[in-house]
Amino acid sequence: MSEKGFQINISKRLGEMLVNSSLLTTQQLNECLEVQKSNGIKLGQILIEKKYITEKQLLEFLSRQFSIEFVEISRLEIPPEIVSIVTENIARRYNLMAISKKDNILNVAMEDPLNIVILDDLKMMTGYDIKPVFAIEREIIEAIDKYYGTKSSKEALDEILQKSNMAEGEASAVDVVSDEEKDKGDDIISLEEKGEAAPIVKMVNLIISSAIKSHASDIHIEPGYKNTRIRFRIDGVLHPQPSPPKKFHNAIVSRIKIMATLDISERRVPQDGRTKLRIDDKEIDLRISILPCGPGEKICMRILDSSGLKLKLDDLGFEPENLAIFSKCLKAPHGINLITGPTGSGKSTTLYSALATLNGPDVNISTVEDPIEYNLEGINQVGVNNEVGLTFAAGLRSFLRQDPDIIMVGEIRDFETMSIAINAAMTGHLVFSTLHTNDASGAITRIGMMGIEPFLTSSTLLMVVAQRLVRSICKKCKETYEVKPELLTSMGVSRALIEQNMKDGKLQLYRGRGCEACAKTGYKGRAGIHEILEVNDAIRALIIDKVPSSKIKEAGKKNGMVTLRDSAVRKTLAGMTTIEEVIRVTGSDVD
Image (cartoon, rainbow, N blue to C red; front, side):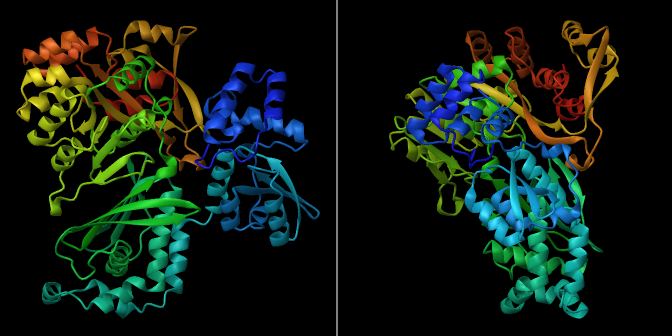
């Protein structure tokens, strides 16, 4: 379900009909009706979010009630001549897909076939009588991406270049800059003109829109001595993309600097900026970093799409025992909860999910972040600004005078910030933050290296969560294959767990063949794997004794701690990811 939710207004009467059809219980319906009274969300959306009914079950039920056909678009092949009847802009705006035509009747799959206004607009725009059908929202979006993306990025880029009015000499002049010119800087008006040139705007728009449609997290635009390279980070892995000629590189840089209100005449020092775009009725934040390299300036753009932010703990991929520990530590009146992992491991999402779970009218939550990635309603968020002295430590120190209940520090990097966080925890505050360590037990060693006394760590630390993201197998091309049990035993998987997952003496795992939906990779989307070290009395004693992190990890495992490798293996046996992903992501998590 998207952020906008299920669009059809499911009435209380229809809810009662779901009960009569044994799709819901009376208790479930009444619970959802109470939620609806308090927040005004449509009943259908609440039913699906609480997983009392699937979107498919609900649409099939509505199909019978309203005598409107239900269609699974993923099973259809839609001819290009049908797709072309409705423009991509209209399809994305109204979330619909033309699927077939007979005589003057156009069959259109819609999220809300009862919306008369959209039906009238479609009839006026296409000239056809419209016959709506029910379809799952996710499948409509995937179909739009699939069929309107038939023109490849390379074809679109070639078309822009062919129509470009920028002369060869002018484009080359953008790229060739003497050392003397670098020192004094180019004429700003000239650079602005090059950055705003129509083909350059189209190129940058194409790069960004292609990345968003590909669900990329980052865009890399890298200068070479002979060419420009563009790569998207999709599901944690970089993928090369069609690139424009090198002669356009500096003009593209100038355009992106203009978008982020950066100094377009400065090419000698790194610059960081931010811009906000609206694409397909979604607000997208771009964090932009520009780094001078030998051949030119390299750009990295981080894509922040708040509509894709998962704020429910159930959606983060926690193992049942991990979720129980995490939920328990969230309810603690005071103490420190740490999330660890490398950049891009989903730490911010976990932190935001924790804060969203705790957020309410009866608590005061303050955060200091560098930068603020997503805006959360009802939470006081402060962005770090080192130029004016607003550091993590300064923000945290100020929070203690703001009567907070819960504090989140984007990252603990030094003794000062850590000591203030410990002081906050000891004076009755619940503190959340992140560290960069490889596993949960390593965080305790890292805190000690900052100069914090062990007795302070042991008395305030509640839990440490280490996490990673593994790529999920594409559901469209998922297949099974047989492996020898020895493969898993060599990775430290217990024989008992292997035997639990064997059928008829055979062990089957899963993989993706590769299809259009996953760009032939076999993967689509990512899932979290977690290792949670709960700081109980036994762990506190080890912290006081200053034992190595390996000993703490060993003690955690004896207490039932699920390691990163264990979590990944479980997801592999459940058919969510592959054994190759387990090795790639948890290669360092071995005894």
